[in-house]
Structures are given as C-alpha cells and as structure tokens.
Amino acid sequence: MRRYLLLLSCGFVALSVGSARAAAWPSDEGRGSCRVTKKTDVPATMRDGVVLRADVYTPDTKEKVPVILMRTQYGKSAAQVQPSRFQSPEWFASHCYIVAIQDIRGQGKSGGTFYEYRNDRDDGYDAVEWAARLPGSSGKVGMYGSSYVGATQWLAATATPPSLAAIVPSNTGSDYGNGWTYEDGAFRLAFIEPWMMEDIASSAAENQGDKKLSQQLYLQGKNPAVLMQQLPYSTFTPFTVNGKNVAPYFYDAVNHSTSDDYWKAFDIRSRYGKVNVPVLAFDGWYDSFLDGALENFNGMQKEGGTPLARENQRIIIGPWEHIGWGRPAAVVSPRLKAIGPVANSPVNELMIQWFDHFLKGVDNGVQTGPHVDYFTMGENRWHSATSWPVAGTQYQKWYLGSAHSASSSMGDGALSQEKGDKQAKTQTDTFVYDPHNPVPSVGGHSCCAWTAGPQGQFDQSSIERRPDILVYTSKALDTPMNVTGPITVDLFASSTAKDTDFTAKLVDVAPDGTAINLNNGIQVARFRNSLSTPELITPGQVYEYRIKVWPTSNLFLKGHRIRLEISSSDYPQFAPNPNTGEKFGASDRMEVATQTIWHDSKHPSSLILPIIPVTTGDDTPPQH
Image 1 (cartoon, one colour):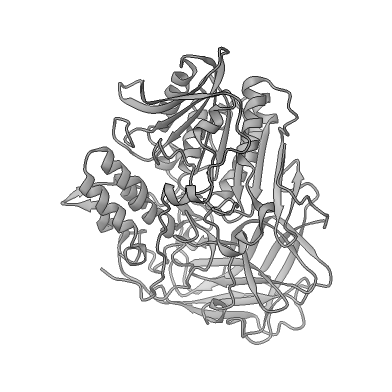
Image 2 (image 1 turned 45 degrees about the horizontal axis):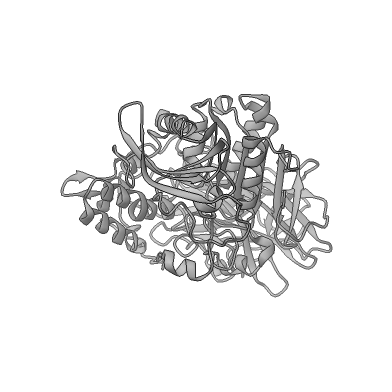
C-alpha cells in the first residue's frame, strides 16, 4: 500500500445538539400560530413490504392541511436542524402544516438495507402518497432538505407521485456520477471517502444492529488525512471488515468511473420531463453541488413535465459552503463568515412562503419563477435575474502568456486581452507534476464542512509559490469588473504521460497581494471528449482542453487583479491522477509527468470570463 508524501490536516468537527442550542438555534422567531403534537416511529409500508418510520408533527387545527415531508439518511430526530440550518419540524408545523420526517430505507429506525440512491425513487413515490393520506392531510405534499436529502426529493419527483405539489431542495446535484462522485472525470476524494465512513456507512451499520462496526467506521471517518492516502481505491480497507464488504456502493462508485448505465439509473438530468412541480432551490458559490443545481434550474425550465413546473423554477445562490449558510452559529469558513448578516440564508422563511403559495393557494407575493437570486462577492450585495447565465452576459477572453516563465507567483505569467501580447515572449510554460506530492487544496467546492474538506474562500498566496503551479495575472484594473456566470479555460497542453489532469482556479488579487480563490475546475485528459468513452492521450502531442471552472459572482474592485492558476492536482479535493493510463482505482503505481502549457499564435490558451454591468445590489437577503 503506497501513501502520498503530503499529509494534510483535514480533521472533522462534530457539533453536538447541546452546543448548537447554546448558540440559540433553532429560534422561535417567526413561529406560526398552531400548537403541535408529535408522534414517533409512525410506520409507512413500501410497495415491497419494507416498513419505513417517521416522526409526524401535527398542528392543532380542524382544517385539512398540507404535509411537508423530509426523507433523510441522517436521522429523523436531527431533521437537519444543526448547525444553524433548517428550523425545527415543530416550527414548520406551527405554520399549520403536518410535518413528517422519515428515515430512508436501511437508516435510522427504518427497515430494509441501505444502498445509495437505489431505492429512493420508488420509496419516495410511496412515501409521498403515504404522507398525502395521513389523518388531517389535505392531500398535497411538499418536500424539503439538503444534500442527500435534496436528492431524495428529486428522485421522488422523477417518479411523478400525483400528490407531490412542490419541492425545496438545497445543496444537491443533477447527476450522482459526474458532479457528485466525480468531477469531469476526477474522483472527489475529500468528499466521498470521509462522508461514507463517518456518515452513511456508519449509520447503516448501526441500523443493522452492528454498533461495533458503526463506531469503527465513524472513528475511521475522523482520521481522513491518513486514510485518504490509501491506494488502490478499489481495495480501500475501511469498507472491508472480516472479508465482508460493508459499503458496496463505494466500490461500485470506484468501478464505475465513466458516465455509464450504473449512474444513468439514478440521474435527474435525463428525467426533467417527469417532474411536474415547482422547485425552489438553494445553493452556494463554494458548495459541492452548485453546478448540478444550476443545471437542474435550466433543465426544468426547458424540459419540465408541465407548464406549472417549467414556469416556476427559482434558485437562490449565496456566499455559502455545503453546510455553512451564514448565521452566527453556523460552520462557515472565516472569510465568508466575516461577510455578516447580509449573507444569512433565508431558506426557512422563503420555504414557508413557497409552500403557502403552492400547497395552500395563498396569494402572498412570493417570487416564483423563472428567477435567480444571487450574491455578488466583493460587493457583498444581492442581485436578481430571470435567467442563468444572466441575460446580456458578455464573454471576455483573457490570453495566457509569459515573458520568461509563469512558474509560481514569483514568475512573470500574464493575462492580457490582447492576443499575442508583446510582453509574452515565450511560447510555452512547463512544470513537473509528481502525484506523490500533489498541490494541496486550500479552499474550494468540496463537501461537507470547511473544517473537514476543501471548501470556502482562502488566501492562495502561500501555495502559489510552488513550482508546479503556473500563475497568470492581469494588470491592476482601472475600473471595477463584475464577473458573474460560468467560466471556461481553453487550454492547449501536452504531457509526457498517457493520461493526466489539468486544474484551473480563478483568483481575485487585492492590492496588498492577498489572493482569494473564487472557484476552480479540473479536467481528466482521457475524458476530454466524453465522460462515457475515455481516450488516452499520446505523450508529447498538443491537445485542446476546455476546463469548466465552476460559476461565481464576484466584483473585482478597482486596483485588483485577475489571476488564473494552472496545475495538475488539487489534493485532497480530488484524487491525484497517477499518470499511468491504467483503470481508475485499480493500481497503486504512479509516474511523474512533465506538463507543457502552450500559448503561441497556433495555441492561444485563454480564460473566458462572463462579464455583466456593474450595478448596486440589495443589502438584505431575498425576502419574498
């Protein structure tokens, strides 16, 4: 077993309910008028006879009321309240809704065997129709929840249950292969391994009565910096106990590194036509599923199953990470937390308005759709639009170049809007990529808390001194520039390897040299043309790569500079490419590669930025 030379501190933080309550969350602010009673472990029988259990909160009212349903693998008693996320089920029920929080199959108090995604479409349909028949129900059901609990909503919605009237998914994607487990071919190491150990495999073992195994997996999940170094991934030891495979979905994910039928069985993007309901989505600029959330927003407008669905899509994007949504007690990286109350998520208030409108028929002025509310960093204000990308976006090319070498921030790599800038005297820049010593992740859009994985906004200047990072920087801006939308790097590159990765990171450089990451992307060479049909590269041959840098909204202030980092690794956000061309996860062998980035007249490597006019936004989160 080979281990990476680079060790990163990547410890996890466990927040107890008690400590979070001491920080005054959940609060009673905005509570409704209905008194609430609670029943625990209410059974719901699925079509195959498996019994799932839910806690049901019922308002004291003689009227028939809609049901708000959460289907979670993280424990129905927790209900994703902490750390400072959703209000409590009692709070939602006080607005005169029945609220049902259900453990999904093989988790918590529910029966059956857990397997990621596999049962959540059929079980979701059955659970929605069960909820619609609860005593006191009006027959209309809405769903809410974040992350995997967003996935359970989308999977249920693609089964088209007739009683489902609206969903509110937060921080969730469109495809559980690309954009969840992988990103443009790269395995999302810092998310997948720790999440499966500490959370889903551990809780699934407890559900099956094996408390010893549950505790073992949980504790291993607390030691990710060591365990993520294990190779090969196909024999990752924590999930094989006494010869037994305790998390088959992990090994299946590793074995299916392409976009094949395994992933297509679960995806959302090919099933928008089956979704007939309005969607209010929430996500963050540093969340692991931002790109998929935006794909869902656009896909539903074009292909949603009904006019009601197509015309009522809304997404709200804040300066948030996966579970860091603002608020004093939230787990948010320091720079984002310092933004203050303007960055607090309005999810709870807007969700009640959304459900009041679509489940109760209240004409309350809630903004329906199509509508995008987005937070512009740098300005630290909110804006809105009716489409994504924002209508009128102009795409601006910034060409890469160097007078001598772009190696590290100490080099002279430049970004210029002039093709063939006179300052760019060299045709290429080179660096050596050693997968034994990958570039460390500093911030990013991983999962699930910034204390656990590479998320959020940090100063990049310390790692930019590494010789395996090429740094291209513009001159200081004469006027502010608003970069809002999807970002692309058109990169011409060659390698001595048969397969490798190329990474790109957009950075805002302040006059004092502070270099803040805005977002990043990666492209595995073998997947440059197709995620389903990999093609190895020929060593030494120049290829064009289009690297998708995930979207952002940032106001580059006057005097700031635009920077692009190019490298071949971002660890542990992504598993380092071993450069061998072998099947992913099957070997512990690695090779060193020499990478050449081309920027001559025949190979005009460029950064393509989405530019919109500079306007003044709102200083409060969306209210309606």
